[in-house]
Length: 79
Image (cartoon, rainbow, N blue to C red; front, side, top):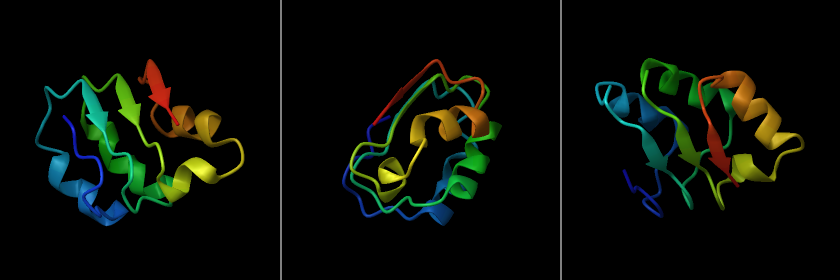
């Protein structure tokens, strides 16, 4: 699913939790800045790819490591 550059804030990710078959999610260029905002994505059992390029969260130290800690089922995470 491609949701790049839609001014999505982290709290709005809760609206995606019913998309349980979702495997790939591109959220680049949105206003996601906190790791806690990604917690809701744990409810997507098939999510294996997540893209957060140009989101404020991607500028944090140890960004990739922490994203994989929050979402251990991910196989691919792009900055």
